Amino acid sequence: MTTINTHEAPSSPQLTDRALAILAFAIYHQLESGTRVSSVVADDHAGHRADPSGVNELVRHELARREADHIAFTERGSAVVEKVLATIRASASSLPVDAASAPADRERS
Figure: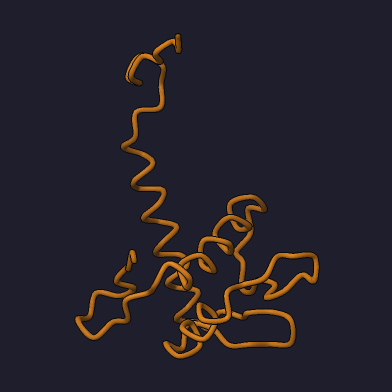
């Protein structure tokens, strides 16, 4: 199970992949729309729903609260979303993305 330290303090929660998936969903929508996302749909009734244990974890760590059909990020939760997004951007900026620096594709026989 992968975890992430959400704050610099040693007493910070370590989030499971299920909780991180909810944050990643918010980040996806934020990147796509260009606007800050303060909540995400918990269940769209079309087969997509946030994992209940991930939601419980975010609520337990006071990163989010349940609101009807949404998961609303608290002020602290919004800060965590922003920090994770900044980390993704920083990591992506060091990736080799141009053709010259990428490994050559091998043809399959």
